Amino acid sequence: EEDGDGDAPAVFLCGKCRRPVGDSLSWAGSDEQLNQIMLKVHDNIVIGNEPYVSSTRKEPGLVVNLACRGCGSTLGIMYTSTPKELDFKRSYFCFGVENIEYVLGSADQQVAVVDSKDMPVTLELQEIVEQQMIKIKALAVTIGHRLMEIELDLQTKSES
Image (tube, rainbow, N blue to C red; front, side, top):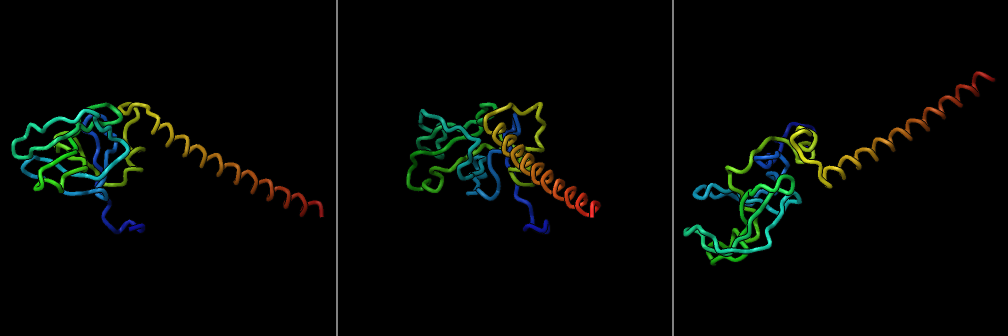
């Protein structure tokens, strides 16, 4: 909720560099036996190119590795092909719970919270900073124009 009374979403972070990799709004489920949580697609994840056969006998299928876009650490797997009983996991990001952390808040808020010394400068972070700078510049220009209008109005009144 916008007024702050509602529960904030949980944001899942890379356990190594603390880059946001998803939130509870993209929740797709969990698997306690394999110690995994399943999330929908997120931009901060790199999907591996080479599928391989899962080494888990309980859950056979073709999988690709998922890595953090920031630091490259492995976060989990994504099933690309599964037996019928595992179809519910196909195409979801299955993160190993040991590879991620979580905090409350939104993924946008977490970009500002993460210590910049620990977070690598990436194109995504640069884009976020540039977008914020554009907003700040637009606000400064608007304030400058408004201030000039007020000064002109005051000058006109003092000359009268």
